Length: 145
Image (cartoon, rainbow, N blue to C red):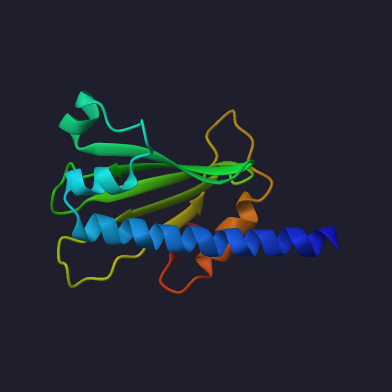
């Protein structure tokens, strides 16, 4: 029974992550840096002057008490904004990235991979989340899991 509940929770979390990434992607494609910051910054955590000069924004996506994602959006290249999203807690090791193509007619494909920084331990659900996201239509993977 526990296995089924955990599998269902991972599936539900993966769907949520997919929707959030698509929402962020839309923001990267349609908003200016200032509009993006206004929409996605965590309250009280707006970019400081150096982040604004670099045209970056950092924010946290809290999925559950044991699972969160740290996101960094960059508008440094105004024609190709990008984002990197790293899982924490149960999803430590999940790495999602995407870059908006310079040609607005080209599709945007999120890339998902399993990457655990040296000295850290992979989250207990990271491998399953990466596999589930790799199976989503339109997502790419760097290395097969």
